[in-house]
Structure formats: C-alpha cells, structure tokens
Length: 395
Image (cartoon, rainbow, N blue to C red):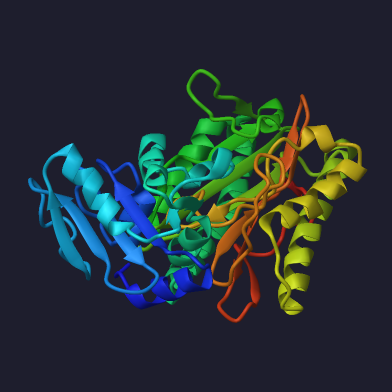
C-alpha cells in the first residue's frame, strides 16, 4: 500500500515513541518492506534504514551501490559505504531519541514480530535508546485492511464456503459409485475448484479422515493418503484468497460423516467445540458492542474455558485463532493465551480466525470461521453459516 507519513507520525506521538527505525537486509524484514511499499520489489543486497521520527523529517540511510532504494519515500538521504559510516549514520538518525520502535519482540514473545536480528538491536541499544516492539504499529499499518481488501475477502469467503457443498457431494458420489474416494482426490478437487474461481493458496487444503483428523496439521501425501469409505469421519480445512496483490485469505474448517446417522461419540465432542467457538464469538461481539477493549488472549480464554470445563483441556493443543491477511497467518493480534500470551488489542479493520478443536487418538473436531471487525466496530462472521452439527453426508 502507498506510504503515508502523517498517520504514522501521529501514531508514534500517541504511543510516546521517539520514532520508528525500519531496517532490512536482503528481504529479511517483510514487515518493514510492506510499511515502506517495497514488498513487490526485488530485495536489495545491502542494508537500508528508514528512520521515521515522531516529529520532523524522516531519514533514509542507503548503501552507495544501491543509492536509489528509498527514493520513493519522503525525507533526507544519507549514503553510506563502510560499516563505520553505516553505524554513524544510524547514530545520526537516533540523536536525541529515547524510545525507538523496531520489529523486535521481548523474549520473542511474538515470533512473527521478531524480524530484526539481535546484533542490530544491540547496536541501537548501544547508542542509548530503549528499543520497544513495533507490534502495535505493525498491526495498525499492516494488519488493518483497506475497504478493497474487505471486498476481496468476501469474494474469497463466498468461494471457500461454496467449496464445502462440492466436497460433500463429491465424497457421497464417489463412495456410492465405487465404494470409496481418497483424501488426495478430495484435495485435488478443491484445488481445481479454487483455480476455476480465481482463487490462489500457498498450500493445498487439509483433508483428514478418522485418526488423521486428530492431527491438527495432518497433510495428506502419497505415503499417508487414506481411503474415505462409508462410516468415516472427515475433517476439511481449506484456505484461499483472490489472486490479486491485495488479496486476503478466507480460512474455514468443517467436519462431516460418511453415512446417514452421526454416531454420538462424534456429536458429543462436536457440541463442546461448537460451544467453545460460540463463546469466543459472543465475547468479541459483546466487547465491541460495549466499545470496550478486547485482547487476543481474552478471546482464547473464552473458548478454552469451555473445553477445559468439559474435561478436554489437554486435547485442545493450539491457540483459538490467528490473524488473517495477505498470509493465512497474518501479522495482527492472534487469539492466543497458550502458545503466546497475546497482549495486543483486537482492532477495527482486522480479521482473524476462531477455530477451537479437540483432538483424540481416533478422530478430531475443529470448527473454523473468520471474524472481521469493520471500521465502525461491527463484527462480521464470514464464510457462510456456522456449522451447527456434523453433516451426515448421506443424510
């Protein structure tokens, strides 16, 4: 997205920061590259720095071999050649600065934010300023969607939702016709459907039958490919986005049973997971309706408490949800108090998944939907109606 200086400097003042030091080496900091509108260019071979002070003129520090790297940005330019001139250039940028934001996370608490190497952080600290995480800034200027991205998400959600009807019909038809289909065959059919409807994805979907559904990140391969027959439990997790530079993902998970009556052992676990999902969604809706702050960790706790109370706490082995953007796992707040203790607020203009799960030795249930908080604080559940029961594919 085009770089805009004024809103960034306003945010820096609101956070009482001296400035934001954006740094990249050979494409190592994709977040910085997005902020300065370099994401779709070839990474440079030398280090560059862009210093955005809370007030005043930004500073560009670039190597003599690649002097035009940041010429599209406002500010003064200094060209360095030696390592000494690089370090003195950073020192000049930071003169008088006390609190500097960087793509850094204390104790790596938010791994997606840890994009600047420890040595560069050490260099900045040695010059005097306190280094603080830019996580809140990144969420504000990278994870918040544009109105066009919201439209693109809805287009992707329509197709991903429609894929499920095709999936269940395909499984039913193949089992009736020849007694079985396979996980890979269903996966291939979904990928064809996405391509036919202008969607792209970084990885094929998960199609997991029976015990494979008890593995949260199971991936069907020729070696693990399982036949799907009558009486099988099937989990399908699929994600895709419109094939557009601004495309953002829709990421959904649903479950079905290859038969006409779903056994109680599946339905009872499904009900717990659905209740956990609904508890998380209700918390989000309640907080935004009341215009009260909401942390990602609180959303996770709302879902997790339901599963813990039902006696399956140890079987819920991942966070409740993740940020969604141009990557399936985006750079905004995650719904997490397990893998990390997410300290960031859920912001208007952001999207995230709600996907609690229970994973047992012979099957697993995960239910995933997406929530988008619009710029007025309205909560949108996307990707079609929430699954309210396990689909009997022959029902």
